[in-house]
Image (tube, rainbow, N blue to C red; front, side, top):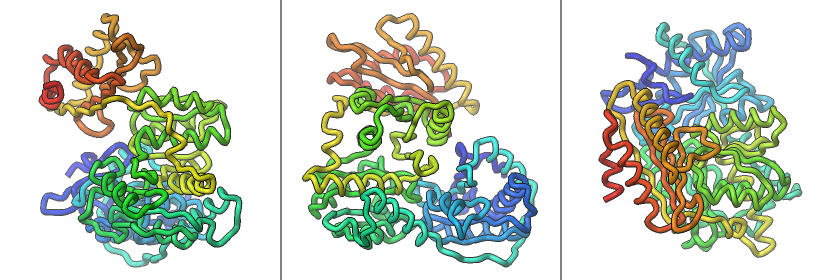
Length: 499
């Protein structure tokens, strides 16, 4: 098979269960070989001196894929450290943690995707691989034939990672107490992914964890999707927090690079609320900084960030895009402490710009403990965040094989219409697709839509928000009239939205 079909941005993903599986142990074995060879070229070391760390989330295909990747790595003569059940951020921390420090690591995960999917994330000391590096690695893998080879060392890393998170909490609270979280009640929802140990960490540090749920790994994800954006998952953690009378709840995706929280009243703090909350915390510590986000943030977010003394820099979707832009801006002398997507992917400068939802939650735990002593909650920091009256997301499929060309033509068509229509205002910081704002009921820029091409799939996502009731339907209807005759663009979802 053509392994390039497994490329998903800067990761490898595919169906891993069933007769039609595309990500098989054989594929994982050759990818393990190719990654060891990649690290040898990158570092200048002999293959016999290369060490690769391996970890996985709770998916049922994880053990077989991890074993196969390990066999492929060992077949090249490189050594393997098997960290077992782990998280994606922990796999990066292993690379830079004294006493471990493999030359690179592979996380076996498909993040929030269904149980029958899986994937490989390749990590070096510089972070995840770029798309071009993944393509080169795939080219190499397709030329290899891996055989079995012994010599794999099983070495759990999560205990060391837990110690690092505990240290961040103690430093944040300015204490060396054994149980610095005494008096705080935290509900943890791991969604049966790899993050159940966070409840153990909270309890070890003195917090109460009654009401925590779905902590045991179960690769079938029987309770809800491990996704902090999923409505069912968020409703579940919200109910658990209010039922337990907890101070807050935290929820992770399967490999813990994404997260969200729930306030004491059960209010979800994800997407724009999560960005606003982290911005408030960081800007309170040091005003004048820039917060880098993806392109689908709400109109109220930049106003909120400005009130806290910061600047909002809206960039492209894709967590690597957001992180790389923040790194670039910092190199130019623009202080950016946070790169964050509305999906819950977040990377802090203080944490190597590592995409780590669990570290993000740990920073929030520190703030929650500080606020509790003042009789306040995390939600109090974002009480004045302006939120839209209505919002919608529509996903339109592209039926042509060359979907990027089709998507580009659609965006060009909408852009030309906007340039000629005085009621359509192109966003001045438009960096992805086309973002258009509208003036409703005598207001200014109180409705907007963003039409873009998906990072990975033949899909055009359309995000739309309005501060005025009825505004979303007006905008979607206006857009429909512009693109209704576009070939190879499936409009049924948009038609349904405007009925």
